Image 1 (cartoon, rainbow, N blue to C red):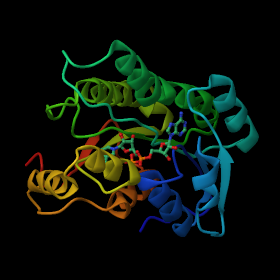
Image 2: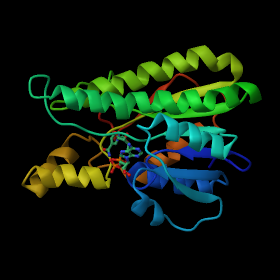
Image 3: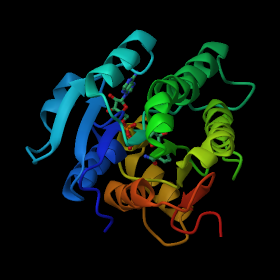
Image 4: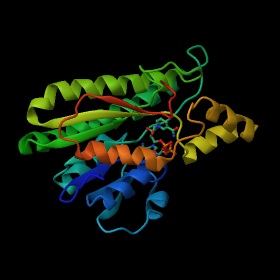
Length: 243
Ligand code: NAD
């Protein structure tokens, strides 16, 4: 595991799922972690670990993002994990859903990156990790139009930031999971009516034969936080979905 001692990490959407597992993994790797989420209740349920502290943050609120980064001071690693999944094809989708997906899945990352970049440039060091998905420019997935559009944009913004700031020793990479067990995945399965049938269909599209664990994605986030020679990459971690 990477040694993140001496590094300060800001992570969004750390209250549950992949963000929660990552906040814990960063802390176990020795980092000083600022675990943020819009949901104060789930943040309070994070384990008490040395180096792990919590702060309520709505990434849709630019002023709150700026205030959060000002409060932390030096951010060495930014993990943009917040995101939302809308169902529906291009004909079924509501424009308001697309607008919301772009705001939360894409523009929120732009807000946080803008807030941390000046400090990273000054120190000539930084790691930015953006949560995308294989449902993006990597793979077309049925019933995920707004989601796929927004997560493809995450890969685009990741590569653009990487290209502009690699000479400042700032690395920017995207994580592209397949299907991962999380509270929102459980909600999506329950919403389909027949939970077992829906879960079996999600498992069937993962050639490895199971849904991923948040901790498996957290391991990649920790690796990218410590990686010093990798930038502009969209890394699939998907149980073989895109083999
Ligand atoms: P989740 O969907 O269960 O939890 C989402 C978290 O985001 C919640 O804690 C919620 O409070 C927080 N959040 C929502 N709006 C927010 C806001 N405005 N500001 C701050 N926080 C906010 O978690 P998950 O399924 O692990 O997904 C995390 C990320 O991983 C998302 O970006 C998602 O798109 C991506 N992803 C998930 C999967 C999967 O199968 N679970 C697959 C690929 C990518």
